[in-house]
Image (cartoon, rainbow, N blue to C red; front, side, top):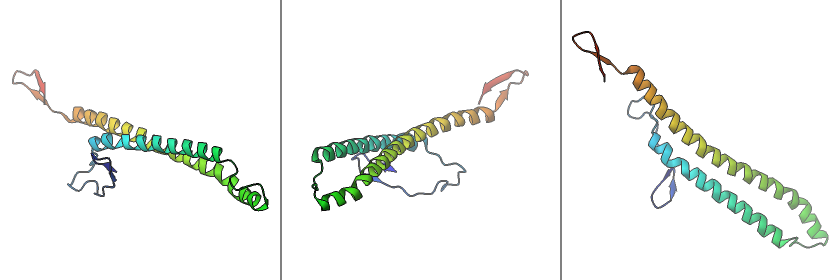
Amino acid sequence: MVVDPVGQRRWQTHAMGDDGEILDIKTADLTATAPAFHTESVALGRALHNLKLALADAGSAWGDDDQGTDFHKAYGPRVRQIEDSTKILTEGLASIHLAMSDMADGHIENEKLVRAMFSTIRVDPHGGKGDDQ
């Protein structure tokens, strides 16, 4: 997902490795996109909180007659399911944020390690080691 400067979300659909690279991991994209999941997680959590408050304030708006009681029997248990599901989504979005940040950090560290492993050591003409290249 890419977030443009105006804050509109749009999904980007380009295949990884289009330019022939085996791993085409863009750490800048991971780092830039990860906060959007945190933002949406917070927004969803707030929406859930506001929904709970609004429903609590409304009380049994459907009444205590037979029809209202029947409605509550069908509706009541689903409220808890919706709240629980929304909480799972909120936590999921937050974990995606953390995972993307960790993935970017891990890729950067791995890149440094691979570069160090495959850097060449220049030998000067007198048999001493030169600078890493």
